[in-house]
Length: 414
Image 1 (cartoon, rainbow, N blue to C red):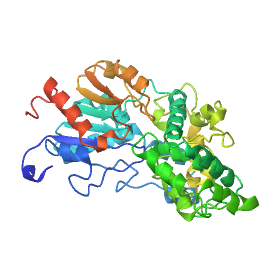
Image 2: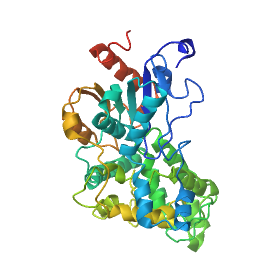
Image 3: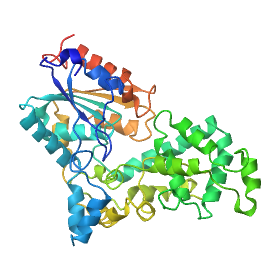
Image 4: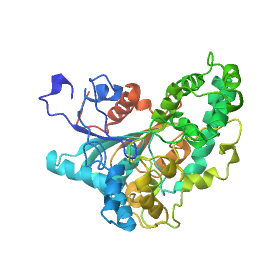
């Protein structure tokens, strides 16, 4: 909370972090994240790490390797990973509320995957919530991983087109980079081989600001020959087609790294109860229907928030997860995370920001779900990208709408 409210009995606001596998913000100051600066004016903000991340019994490659070395079966490893999905996370948070906060109901704020968690909270423990806010994170219910990627891959293609429209010179530069990487001898600082597919993953950030600029300047720095121009790159290397700069190679490695559970859980956040069909690498299935995303296609297309089997061969930090992930891909039994009847009769005020051009969580699917959740309200805007919450405008807008509608009556008054 704000310093002037430190002794006040403020209502609680619990933050449901995006991800999966993301730890809560570590504020450097009240103004380091705009929504926090705004929220602490009205709430005591609780920033809990979800299980498996941050300081909450972190799970990473060494965890999975240790299990394998100890003779834990692949099936048991897969069972273990299931324990880090929404049903378990929300049970943790409800236990936290009951044991550490005197069972006081709280307000929730869910960003991205935190919105998925919000609907799980509303499904399983609505009595724990006074009101809920979500930003860029209403899942489609009923959940279906393949359906998600059938909507998001065309958005990825459009984002790539927009990137090239802004930086037309990067069409040729990105193609030259991909051609050079395809020769197979470019190695990342951590010893992993840089592949065209991994280069394409730079598009994972295209749904946030200012990602176009970051990727452009990374591509601009790619060529080590001469003055860094495409002409010097092609001439300087002769038959070997030039050299890629150390800064570029490091930048690709850094930009495509992620938290340990982010990719292993990526497709299973869409698994709700008993599945009709196993997930079976849904993003890869959809990608194979769109040849423009091939690493040999030109112009080179960038991919977004999508997990592929090759990642578990190429990235050392993911390799110990592969047996369990592959097992889960064939599984059809998962924890129940949404109660559609409960949501249809929801009594907890839900206020959502839906970003019309959201690359990660399709706005049309979000609005379809919201149309079937009672007591829900939404604000659709194209002013922000998926990370719009990082400023103070989005939270302030949602808070003011909820306050003016009376959703926060009894806990906060203007």
